[in-house]
Length: 375
Image (tube, rainbow, N blue to C red; front, top):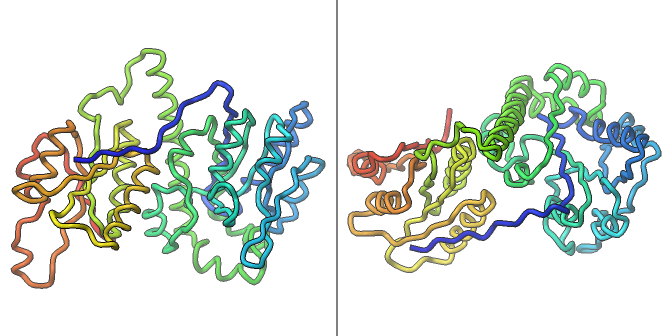
């Protein structure tokens, strides 16, 4: 059995303070509030600068920039075009007390030292500079499947949950769905030619209400976990002290559904403050090139969630027996596994599956069987 874990870091007393403003959707006022707070800090003598702010053409937001100092953006040429990116080294050289960096989920243009903006922010924090940034809840990696189910939109740029957990402070910027729609109709979120399309799609009342609920729950859970962590550090008892809630095992293969299973497993582990394991049972023969690429993709996502990635060959007795053996070896308390996929013929539906074997032979664990789709 092969076990791998790539991520992991050490804390530093000189590390900068990270604050994340969270919203349910575009237009709630995250950037506006960041700038408003920054102006208050400046009046109190704090050395605060703008690293990057996106006003999206919103006059009220642009007005809040006021007299705040900005570190000039860095010009990057790629495929004959010039792009403006965050000047990370310029910020480190200027070394303010606090820097504002908008659009947290942004993917950098090829040619930058790091691929994602959250990696740039990590680098700046490591240099002892406080960072204030902003993100909408739909960009959180573990909520990807839920957001797609609610809105029908597949969010491409996402932020790993470990980065959110790293924040010293999370601030929810909350407005009602009705207020958001009114702002949209007044042209305060998108240009006029995009308003009707937005109302018919992402900005439907049901979507906004569901996203708002996700944001409220996420921030409330963050507060709960911080309180629980403080209790642990002070030696008080905690709801997470139950040893039976220690380890979660997610069983995946090479199907796209594996990503959904890993996200679901992480959310279970995160709620219980448990350790996450991701298991792939390998066939006895060699993997094809496509399977190898899928394996790398699954391993990368597992590591994004700070999970321990495990591979093992199929044991005698089949995949179900292998899963049970690994669960016993690791002392697993809960297993997350996908719903079996059957063919159209009724004989195939009569066959025993790994889920059947785990149900009958792993009475020592709780079993979560995740559906492929929800109607």
